[in-house]
Image 1: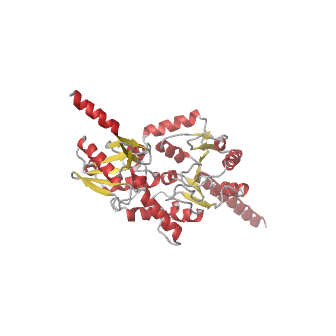
Image 2 (image 1 turned 180 degrees about the vertical axis):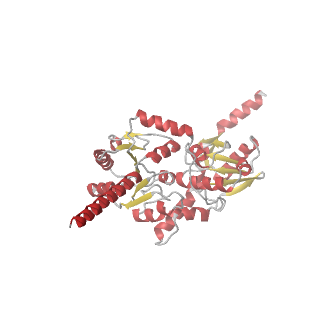
Image 3 (image 1 turned 90 degrees about the vertical axis):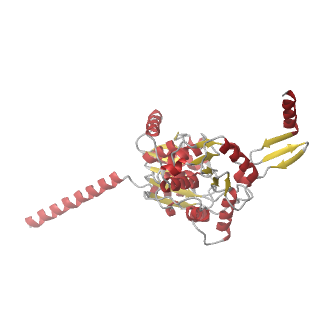
Length: 382
């Protein structure tokens, strides 16, 4: 027994598996060998299957908030309860659990952040394979997004990202309706937090962060929030990091579900294009979306013009039963744009709430009726 433990300890010292975030490397007697994404994933999924209930499918979620929400919605609307019970979802980033709760509620979920690197290195044409009678399906990898963005850059005509998602990923279903499940607990928590922050009922939500789009200087968001407050609006920022940009407003760091509940009550959502807007589409009253160029993110994902970003990722082209008023603005050079002019465009795009529109119509009718009565009375006197 001691000899076995000694050999095992020795083996661990001369053969190591090192996780570097973007890849896994094997080290043996000074030699370095990069792990194969396919072989590594097959080994890990086999271990999961051996130590759990026998599932018919294992679906691995990678990054990309909007696309993942659409794929989960499609599964929920096309599969019955028994079919969903036979699926194990594997999340690789923290917010995947939020997306599961919002779009495909299930208890069959495990969190494996150590698998996230696989989608960065995946070079196999197929995104699915079988292990011991279980079908393993992956959501789109970096390779898929790199090829799609190359199509956008190289051509004047290209499919919208929503259509392309389901045309290229046949293991998933296009949803009949995209609608998140917001829990009562989330609604109560958000209501309490807004009261603690002393947020007025009439507020504008600003989402000024994006992983892909070039951002504006902080002075733009600062000036915009200042002008909104002068108009009588309270300003709430949906942000991960407190900065001078959000110093006038009230920062609200929340889960995705809580963020959607804040969006639902806002008079308007003003935002830099990001995956959060895909989620907000079914719940927002109004959206003003700022499209800026894609920044350089990697060799596979270089820059892209704002015009092409808007054409490929326009929210107006996403089929949704609840389609709010959406105003999309294209800004090619966010760092040198005329802030005063752009802010005026944003503020002038904010539509009054329906009750105010109705009130205006009633007041106009009363005005016309009074004029008609005055005219009739004048004619009678003459």
